[in-house]
Length: 223
Figure 1: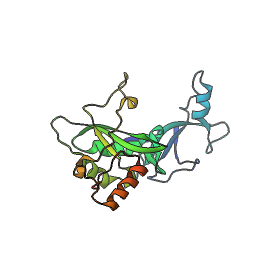
Figure 2: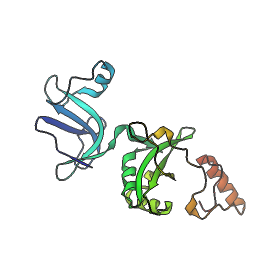
Figure 3: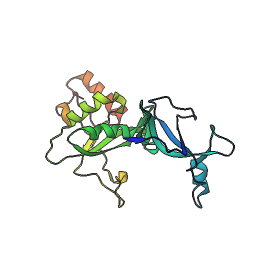
Figure 4: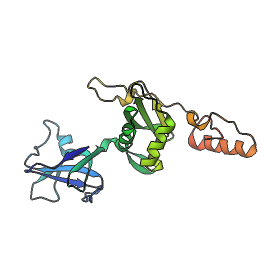
């Protein structure tokens, strides 16, 4: 979503990790400076120290506010909101912005809402799980969603599991209750053609290896 340009008395910076200015089109965290920046949070010195930081670009005593928002500059000079920093995770060595995956899911005409989480599969391994609900009257298959995701995202950002819900659970203030999302079923993919057991010693060995490495109870030959 485009959030426009800063106000006249406000300075904004898009910074990558390490405090470097992000190039045009590169996603970074939004920092705000200028007259509109407050002194800090009332009676919250720890949070103030974390969010209000010394500006490396301004004069003596000038501070910047770390928003936690991930944005990038578009060619027209407007800022585009890409998600929240606290929704950024690391899976299999890749740093992933969950909101980027969610935006691809909800772009599908038959999807009403979607949320993506990094699910703990055990032994320190995380997997991406996409939860979604369909629009009334639409019939969307998991295969269609995976094709849509594959066209727009690199393979490592395509969720391992896609879970369809009647509606996403909400907190009292109307936000998605991520803690209430059900765990994905560790089963073969529904669109893979059903479960096929190993038919010879080589397939038995390979299935055993994949079950051990991926922490799955069973793996189909077609998977």
